[in-house]
Image (cartoon, rainbow, N blue to C red; front, side):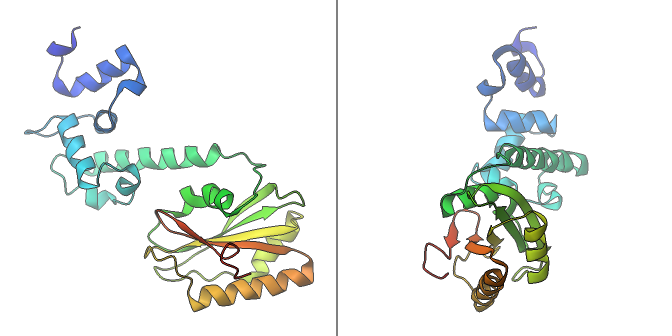
Length: 225
């Protein structure tokens, strides 16, 4: 059936079948997830409006809650959940593409490994990367979830996990939902506490990374370890 006589909301699907997924624009991909528009707008037009509201940035769209999405005419609870679920699938896929035995040679490597988990969260989380003698990743773990301004890690849990995986080095990381890259006094304090505890167990703290949506701060790079 020629595209021109299809219902407008069906055209992205037809284009997908005829030309492949890479031929679709961002708004067309989002339109397929939504399935339909509203009385005044096609699915593609509504998708374009939603993406325009976040600067046509998928990461910014990922920050919107289902309630935020439902503010757009034509987006009910089911569509909002579908959009959020699709973005979560993309996020999880990105995690799985990271090799389990990735090698960490600098702070950028650690940031790339963790940015999908931490960059767009609205509350703080504390994660750790556990490495062997060759600085290859043997385990990645979320240790705590906290509030908007702080997530407190239990040093005993951190090192128990390190010992369970026979780790000789660790990189700790947490996010700053505020977007600030400046370490707080608590950040500096817990870093030194973990560093000193590691010396006793011969487990080296290699870095502490603060992650924001667009960048990161490395304690190691800044000479704070």
